[in-house]
Image (cartoon, rainbow, N blue to C red):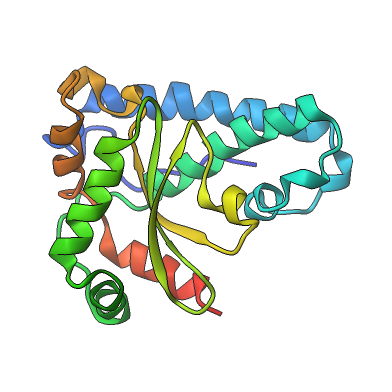
Length: 206
């Protein structure tokens, strides 16, 4: 499994996400999750050929409890960060359009209401974790929050596919925003790449 390759420089998301945070987040935290995930997979040859999403959607098949926890934590960190870094960009900050925009209105009332609800999920997550926008195969959208490196794939056995992730571990924002998580979440909307989120939505709908 490989880290997603960034399509922008570490400094490109300034002033919303600072260069030092991006470097540390990608080169240290994400790299460590990737290395540890791959190390666990080396001990699980029966999972060879499966995607990260397939593995995380069916953790119960891993009989060894220690390896299952390693895959949950590090595989989650790998998958979650790949999604996070893929759905932000210097060209972000616009609003959704097309099919995704229509579904946001149907499921949440309006884009403004969606933004308020997912921001509340991110800000209200106690301790470290994530806030998510996910889709099921029928195209319905849901907002959830998970602790640690858990994600909707794990919680739903693959019924819900994440299409947008807000990382609220302190390493995602503390260098710039200190304890002001709400300021970071507000700034995060300035870098969301809604075209990429829309592509992931279309792929999730079957």
